[in-house]
Amino acid sequence: MHTRRRYHHGDLRAALLTRAEETLREKGPAALSLRELARDLGVSHAAPSRHFKDKQALLDALALAGFHRLAQTMTAALKETGESFAERLRAGAHAYVEFATANAELLDLMYAIKHTPEASEELSAASRRWIEQMESLIIEGQHRGEVRDGPLESVGTGVFSTLHGYASLAASDSLPAEVRAQDLEELVAFILRGCAPEKTG
Amino acid sequence: MHTRRRYHHGDLRAALLTRAEETLREKGPAALSLRELARDLGVSHAAPSRHFKDKQALLDALALAGFHRLAQTMTAALKETGESFAERLRAGAHAYVEFATANAELLDLMYAIKHTPEASEELSAASRRWIEQMESLIIEGQHRGEVRDGPLESVGTGVFSTLHGYASLAASDSLPAEVRAQDLEELVAFILRGCAPEKTG
DNA sequence: ACCTGAACACCGTTCAAGT
DNA sequence: ACCTGAACACCGTTCAAGT
Image (cartoon, rainbow over all chains, first blue to last red):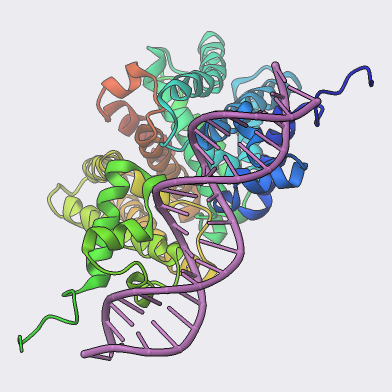
């Protein structure tokens, strides 16, 4: 008998998630079927139910993994940049838009409405994580005097609404061509003005 | 023989769309099935295929109708407000967020990635319509000296990214409670600063 | 523990045939 | 023109049974 390796498959749960994300990206969400996944992995059609009680449970897990990857990407991007608010905002914006366009179908899933109540809670907690990354950016910016003072919501809402709006419009290919053509500089400038400290003169 | 009324149903196409939107709103997109729709309307399960070649074709039509309604709502809202850019922006923002939260599942569908190529073209044209409504707001604002000059994209991108981001985060229930609690005034203020004319001093 | 195989109720899509 | 009824190939989910 072999030392490791479970019954038929090494780690079916992980394999299901990986394969699901591939077909999501390649053939879209409508083409995602548990039975086909099972076929692709060489297990019986009933095997997935050991690991995900539901098709929805698999979708929820996929979305959750997406949020975790997004948070990692953001952390990595922010680590490699300067200290000014403008630089850090630019890095964050770039990372988020990059992620959104490279994982358009997944982003759709991450912000879908149809999640299980329990998963919903986990998911909104996960979505809060990148919002919090943005929030700490803003707090830093306030300490540096580069962002107007006041309660976090007063400027934070604008910042992540703008980022998320641009990212999701870009992901769903809904931006006018002229806009898509330019880089993110205009958007960053817009946000910076929205964040600008009240003039102290 | 009765004067009007087609074979079994008055206007199956319209009835299918209406009923589809109801079940979309009440039971979510996963619960939407052509066969159940047909059952609900008392026709055979094959009848819908006369009017929509595909399930996707029905979804596309639903999304398109959504864009038309959104455009109407926006026009109506803008007609009933003042002339200053701030007022008009506020009215537009309110109308869009209202629509988004009242039609969350439909909004999801409108910005979904999975549309038929042909429908995709119609849909992105439809989505351009409300973007253009926002653009004309901005041009007006520029004429009034209330919005910074320059090419449309330089400030337009920021404006509708922010609106769409807030609306879709609100629709997917992804906004922190403190944010959701306040009204739109903070967001409008953020956008207004982003639009502010360069100071001429 | 992990998976199989059969069973059930449901799909979407197509196509001859009816009125 | 518009719809029906049967047929086909596919689903998701459940559950006894196997190793």
